[in-house]
Length: 228
Image 1: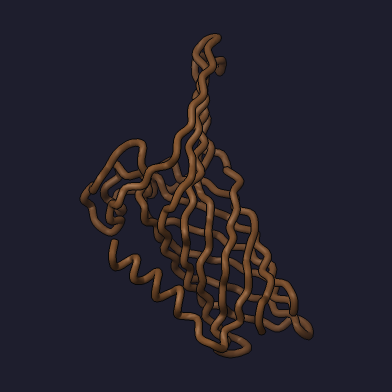
Image 2 (image 1 turned 90 degrees about the horizontal axis):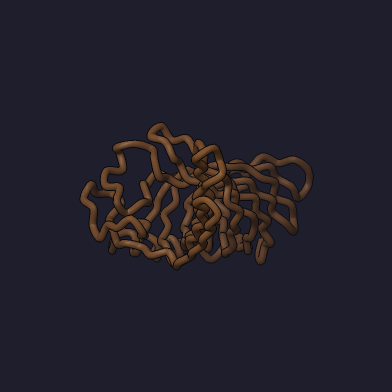
């Protein structure tokens, strides 16, 4: 845990003075894998958001490094029907993370003051909040409940189950980003796909065991440059 926190702090202050800073905000289409081979089968997309500050180091016109901090929502909507579909259990969980990406950026000039870019790289994230909601129907009885998401301090890089419980998520997530966009003079349009690599259910021990319980998130974002 300490190593991940130190890495977050390093990424926060890694942007050099000549960096191109921009504010980012947008839509997250979040889901989580349900099967051992990494499919989101029978889970539905949850709409959430991302917002934060990003910076590019200004290495060259063709190649750059991008990092920053984002407040990002993840999760999923799951529905299970039984007895011919008249009874069901619907679950919606929407955890929030402070996420630090570190991307390599390749820029391709389009026209004056506009570039097409592709980016890819790792990210690490720390869970900070969120809520879970349940709705169930058994015969004529419909019941609902909700609770705040609790995070365990399990180390995602080990196979031991530290502070595990069925009503908790692992506090730390990590994964890979890949995407593309267009950088205009006064606005940045970005599409990103986040491939989570940590099994975030706190009862899941071995991250290499399968691809179940890992985040899959598509982000559509707009950036407003503060400096060039």
